Length: 609
Ligand code: F6R
Image 1: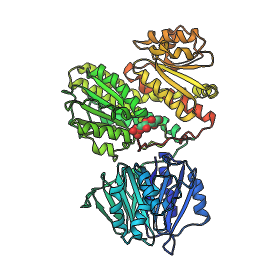
Image 2: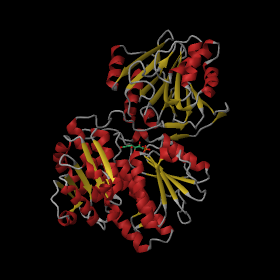
Image 3: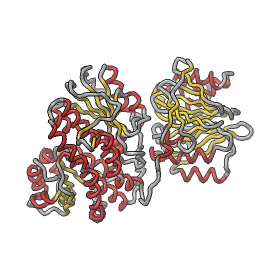
Image 4: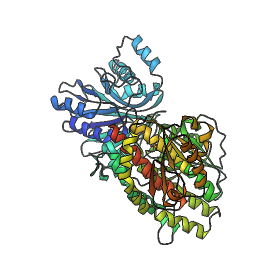
């Protein structure tokens, strides 16, 4: 979602602000802007709706010379995407960029308007500029002004503020949304994540919830919410070392789909001892599922589908009952929690607001909290008792692909470990599952070979308005994921169903215009899915079958298209079948010509409820 960068520099900062915003593009945005100081000390803003090239054109036209500045990519919450609503918001005294939501902005705005202050945007953010201005105009220093305003703001947010005539400071604040400090040589930075800071420094400190910070050329003074000066550890971020380009691919999403054999392999290497053929959980976790009565999993979107797949695995391989819920539902449904249960959160970004809130809810109930996360510096990683990493590397495409399969990899390893710890799996059981896992990078590489066939299929799919995805067992969450992928990047309406549910309603949708994508490797329940396919065929539905050679031979049907993957053990099928599912959505979107990496209305890291 919104991205923040701030620089207290020694040379003009406009281009560096824009460079950093470019790195934040992947989070999703609809407008962008920067504010710097003119030679007179006045605040100067450049803002543009749409892509960053529009902002860059403004910068190139009249390059600002200020050596201190803030920048922002906005993902609209309050007020339509427009230049008027783009950040920074400013008065003559202060400019502010903001990530998150100020919940009580209406009453604060009324108060400020009552004092004769004039607002120019529909955003919740502008109220912060006015509140701080009001205090500065009444004689407060920037630091005192911010200190007096922060306790008045309700909601979850991160802020960066720039002050008229002060080329020596910026102030940042964090409540709910992440904010990091970057330490340079004679220069200091603020950023919504380490990626934003990567071009400038790898020395990074993360504000804790409630912290706020004053950065100057010399360093940072961090205070907690009580105003006490506090120290936060400065760590080395590896974000700058991460390669963030498209390689030979047209889109980040294509690159990330193709990277999967490699990054799944990296993730496996953290969980599997290849020599003994046993699971070896990441070294720093002495965590055990042995005595756990029930596992509670929460996540959002694609990460939720990874968790739903894991439910099948934990129950099957470890005899461990699993409750799973979408985080935004879980946190409000007042689920009774037993302190002896363990909760597990799944998140690529580690910043998803609902997942984080669900985590805090479980923690408050006294549960041990574990997380499967991709961004190790994230809030979810830092607030969990035990962290299980995925090694997907930075995922830039808004639609999750490689993070999903790495989540599946880590979760399957955890389920196998749980099976051993609980005495459900014996040595042989563990070894045969691990052997299957070891083969997965190769099988995924094989699965990528169907790309050409899928490209042809995508051309016809790009012409439809609706599609259905069906699967059973662990392929049911994948059907949900397939439908999500298709709708989010191609804007074609799609639904995923458990194949057995078809006749309980959705079968009414079937006619010759309805493509039905069936994910059905030849496993124990294949025959059941064949019955459902027959129901579709009898009503003229157009079946696209994703299966293996045995499945293709045994279906007894003539689907419109059959995509054949290598034979593989059922346990790893969701990882391999994710590939054709992702490729189908990707190529369909490419045919339609949508913005594949940054689909409309979507944000990579959803830091508001
Ligand atoms: C879909 C997608 C989203 C995310 C969801 C959770 O392609 O990417 O549904 O999976 O927003 O995000 P994380 O995993 O960062 O918590």
